[in-house]
Amino acid sequence: MKKYDIIFVGSGHANWHAAVTLSQAGKTVAIVEKDKIAGTCTNYGCDPKILLDGPFELLDRLKQYQGIGISDAPKVDWSALMDYKHKAIDPLPIQMAGLFKQLGIDVLMGEGKITGEHTVSVNDQEFEAQNIVIGTGQRAAKLNIPSQNYLHDNRDFLDLKQMPQHITFIGAGVISIEFATMASELGATVEIVEFTDHALGAFDQQSVAKLIQKLKSNGVQFNFNEAVTEVKKDGDQYKVLTNKERTITTDYVVDATGRIANVENLGLENVGIKTTRGGIVVDDHLRTAVKNIYASGDVIDKKIPRLTPTATFESNYIAQQVLGSTEEIKYPAIPSVVYSLPRIAQMGVTPKEAEQSPHYHTQKLPYGKQLLFQYKNELDAEITLVFDQENYLVGASIYGNDAPELINLIAFIIDDRLSANQLNQKIFAFPSASIGIISLISTMLHQD
Ligand SMILES: Cc1cc2nc3c(=O)[nH]c(=O)nc-3n(C[C@H](O)[C@H](O)[C@H](O)COP(=O)(O)OP(=O)(O)OC[C@H]3O[C@@H](n4cnc5c(N)ncnc54)[C@H](O)[C@@H]3O)c2cc1C
Ligand SMILES: NC(=O)c1ccc[n+]([C@@H]2O[C@H](COP(=O)([O-])OP(=O)(O)OC[C@H]3O[C@@H](n4cnc5c(N)ncnc54)[C@H](O)[C@@H]3O)[C@@H](O)[C@H]2O)c1
Image (cartoon, rainbow, N blue to C red; front, side, top):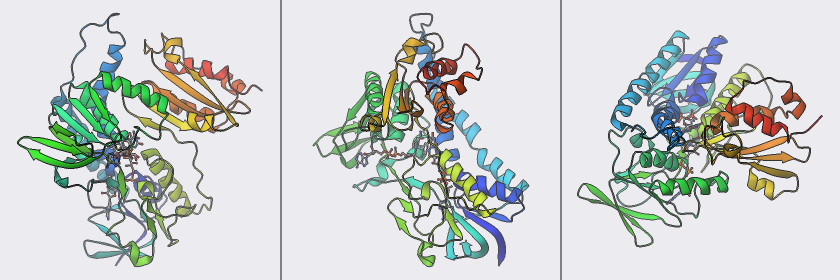
C-alpha cells in the first residue's frame, strides 16, 4: 500500500494551499479529486462568475456618465463572452495539475473514501497516510418538487451559450442576485421566487432594499413569501407553479435555494466522524472526532461565511498544525461581498447588531455624493460604519461598485484596531477612491 504523510480529499481552496505548503516543507502529499481539479471557486463559482461579470460592471460605470459625456453605451455579446470564459477558465485545472506535478504532489483522480483512521480508498485502491484532510465542499441543493430535472444550478448558468429571454430564479440568496444582475443587464426578463420575506439575509437590509429597487427598475420581479411547488414542461418553455396558485411561464429555471455539504459516501461512519445538517463537526483545531483527520472549507459545519478566503485561511491553518503548531484557530473579521451592480459588502459588526447594542454606534456616509470626483458620479454609493465605545472601527457595510476593494482596505483598520493617528502616519495616492474613504473615516476614529 502506498504511504503518504498527508492525503487531501478534494482539490479546492480548502485543501490545495495546505498541500502546496506541506510538499514544499518536505512532506509526501496526495490530493484526491473526483471532478475538476481546483474545485468549485475555480471551475463553477467565483472565477467564471467574476469573469462574466466584468463587462457588465464596466457598462454600469458608463451609465454614471449617461447624459454628461456618454450617450450610446456598448452592448454585451454574451456568447462571445462565454467563449472567452472557456478560454480563460478551462485551462486552469490543467495548470493546477501541472503545479502539483512540479511540486511532487500525487493527484489521484476518483472518488475518495475514508476506510480507516489512516487509510483512504480511491477507485478500489487503498492508500495510507499519517494525516487526512477532508475538503469536499458543498453542492447545490435541489428542491424536493416534481420534475426536479428541469431545474438548473450554478454550473449550468455559468455555461449558458445564450441568455434565455425569461429566467426564473428560486431563492433570493447571493447566487440568484448575482446571476439575476447579469441576466437583467442583458435584457432578459427575470422573476425571483423567495419563500421568506427578504433577500440576502446576511447583508444590511437598507442596502438590500436599494439594490432591489435598482433591480426592479431593470425589469427584475421579486415574489416574496412564495414557494415553488412544481415545474412543468410546456413545449419549449416551462410553467413554474407556486403555492399562491400562480403560474410563471419561463424559458429557464435556476434553483438557488442554498448549498449542502458533501458528506455522503465518504466513509465517515467507518471511523465515527460526526456530521450535522451543516457539515462535518470539528473542534477549535479543525480536527474531526478522529484526531489525525481534519476537515477544511465549505464542508465544515460552521457559522462563519463559506467563502474562498475562509477555506484558504483554514487550509493555511491546517498546514501549520501538521507542521507542529498547537494554536487554536482564530478568525479575523471576514468580508462578504455580493457581486451585484452595485456591489454590497459587509464585514464585522452589522448595522443591525449595532442598533441592538449599547456598545456600538453607527455613522452612515453617502460617500458617492460627498466624493463626487473620486467616485466618478456614483451618486448612490454609501457606507455605514460601526464604531465601538472607544471609537475604533468594528464593522462596515458598503453599497457601491468599489465595495470589494474598499472592504479589503477597511479590513486593516478593523483587524489592526487602527487609530486616527496611526492612519495619518501613512501617505496614500491622491486622487484615488480609497483615500477619500480613509479621510472620512479618520475624522471619526479613536484619537490618541
Ligand atoms: C456560483 C458561486 C459563486 C461563488 N462566488 C464566490 C465569491 O465571489 N467569493 C467567494 O469567496 N466565494 C464564492 N463562492 C464560494 C466558494 O466557491 C467556496 O467557498 C469555495 O469553493 C470552497 O472551497 P472548498 O475547497 O471548501 O470546496 P470546493 O471548492 O467545492 O472543493 C471541493 C472539491 O472536493 C471534490 N470532492 C467532493 N467529494 C469528493 C470525494 N469523495 N472524493 C474526491 N473529491 C471529492 C469536489 O469535486 C470539489 O472539487 C461561490 C460559490 C458558488 C457556487
Ligand atoms: N459572492 C459570494 O461570496 C458568493 C457568491 C455566490 C455563492 N456563494 C456561496 O454560495 C452560497 C450561496 O448559495 P445560494 O445563493 O444558493 O444560497 P443562500 O443560502 O444564500 O440563499 C438561498 C435562498 O433561497 C431561499 N430558499 C430556500 N428554500 C427555498 C424554497 N423552497 N423556495 C424559495 N426560496 C427558498 C432562502 O430563503 C434563501 O434566501 C453562499 O453561502 C456562499 O457559500 C458566495
